[in-house]
Amino acid sequence: MILLGPPGAGKGTQAKRLAEHLGVPQISTGDMLRAAVQAGSSLGRQAQSYMERGALVPDDVIVGLVRERLTQPDAKAGYILDGFPRTLGQAEALEAQGVKLDAVLALEVPAEDVVRRIAGRRTCAKCGAMSHVTFSPTRTSGVCDACGGETVQRADDREETVRRRLEVYAEQTAPLVRFYERAGLLRRVPGTGTIAEIFARALQALG
Image 1 (cartoon, rainbow, N blue to C red):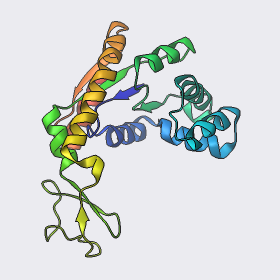
Image 2 (spheres, helix red, strand yellow):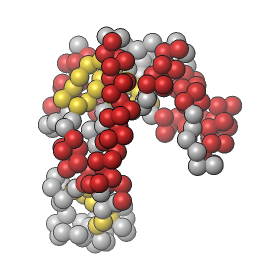
Image 3 (tube, rainbow, N blue to C red):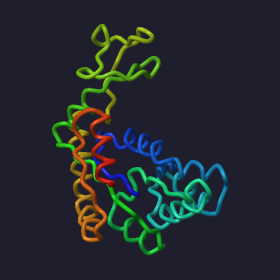
């Protein structure tokens, strides 16, 4: 199955829990790219040539990597594609390559909730520990609990950046959601509440 959702929706957290519960691998394109490059496969070498130039890896190479990854033994009983495909073109290419899906879970989180989740993140400039101004604040504002370093807001966590990322996601994903809805595969899952509550909804949506 595929797990879709905007930045900050908790896809990684839910994909990990679902993978453990179902006994299948959680597969992300980032992991696949790194593994293929390290393995030196034909597709890995193609991907590396783009990555070394700082260019986006084309859809056909990404989809080829996905299909190659899905032939591995641990994926025989099923798998969860985490945040892939990201575009209608990738979804159509995946279908054209004969990849059969059972379900597509769409985590739905209001934009303002996503902004609060991401824009509130703080990272220690010294040790990299994460905190959140609302959900998991440090004991002293601006000071890391772990090492005493300064906590800062990363550039990609700033509110204006988050809102732009949400706009891009909406532009790319709206056609993708319609594509899977027409195919009868889409299951909408409200992505607000506790991790356990969202996980229970995901399992219910899968039946």
